[in-house]
Image (cartoon, rainbow, N blue to C red):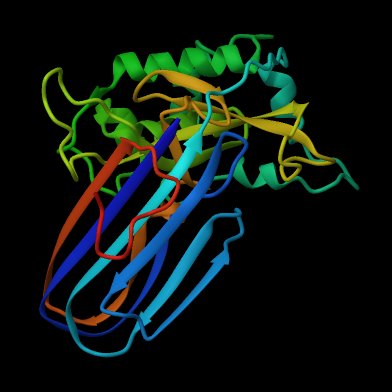
Length: 317
C-alpha cells in the first residue's frame, strides 16, 4: 500500500519568542514493513541551525535552533511510503521463557531490547499492573497468545475518551480510570508487560482512517497514533539490530483497535519512532525564551496515493 502523510504543527506566541531550541521526531524510518520513498521536513521561520541524527533507539531526529524573535512556528513533515502487511511467523515461546531471557547472567552479551524492561517517565511497573495482566498470562501460555489476550482486554474494558487525560498522564492513572486515548492504552499495556518482566516498547506513528460512506476525506482531521511492541527472543531479527546475536523480533499490539502483527499491526499503519514511552518520541518538544501565552494547532492527513515523490515546496495536491 502506498500512503502519504502530512503532519502540521503550528504554535502562535503572544508576545513573540526571543529564541528557541526544538527536538523533532517526525521522520519515519525504513523498516521490514515500510519503505520511505520521499520525505521533507520544513520549519518556518527558517532555523538558524539544524542537525539531523539517530537517537539511541535508532529514531531519526532533527534539532532546530531559532535565535531571532518570532511570533509563530510552523513545522510541516511530509512523507510518501510503501507499506506491506505483516507476515505469518509463528512463535510458541512461553511468556515465562521470554521473561527469563532477561535474567542477568555473568558475562552475557548485552541486548538492546533489555532497555525496555525497566520503568520509564510515564510507565512505572507495579503490583496493580501485574494483577491486571495475570489472568491473560497463565502458566506456560505462549507470549503472543497472552499478549493478544491482554490487548483485547484493554480494548474491551477501556473507553476511548479524548478529554479525560493529558500528555503527561501516568499509566497508573489511566489504569484506575479505565479511559483515555491511544497513548494511555499503550502506556497501560507497557506497564503490564514490564511488571511481568517482559521487554515492551512504545511505538508512535499514524493509521489510515476511512471517512464515513459518501463523505469526503477531510484534510487535517487525522491524528497521530500509538501502540506497543513486545519482544520475543526466539526468532531471528530481520534487521539484525535487536536482541543478542541477531536473535529476537518485535511483535506489535494495538490495544486501541485490537490489531496485531510482526513489526506492524497492518499495512495501513506507519511507524514514526520507538521508545520507552511517549517521553522518548514526542513529535515536537523544546525550550523557548519569551512568550507569555501560546496556542497549539495540529493537523494530520494520511491518505492513499500514487506518486513516489512529493510535489514542489508549497504545493500539496
